[in-house]
Length: 138
Figure 1 (cartoon, one colour):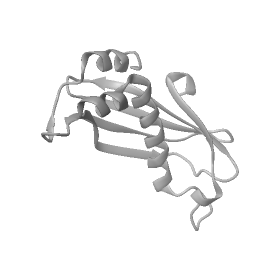
Figure 2 (tube, rainbow, N blue to C red):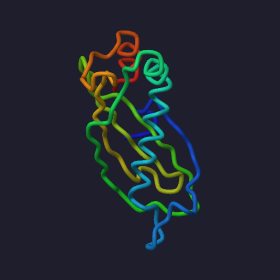
Figure 3 (cartoon, rainbow, N blue to C red):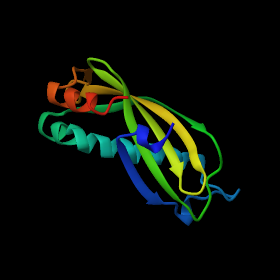
Figure 4 (cartoon, one colour):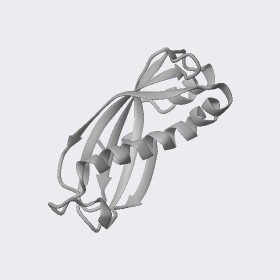
């Protein structure tokens, strides 16, 4: 797994406030890194705009993280994502966090379901968004 495997990438510094009492980035922060990458992906494929205009958008159904090694301060991370499974009403995002100092420090995934927020029911991924997501597949 390398940076080149991921089409959506965000680089950001590790903040002192992200450290816990043990002197490394708290595990909850990794889910925030994943969220940042997820939202960047949504913006890139037009999901955020579609949700604003149609009331149909993503909801996170499941997520996980594998912590490979502690992340410290100071450092810079690149948070990445790609699409690994694309269904009619759902897709899976694979995430990775790369440290400038240490390389891969964590990876995980998230299952995203398209939801009609007015009815609270699953719905099909709109064709244009589906095509854009397919371009981000591994």
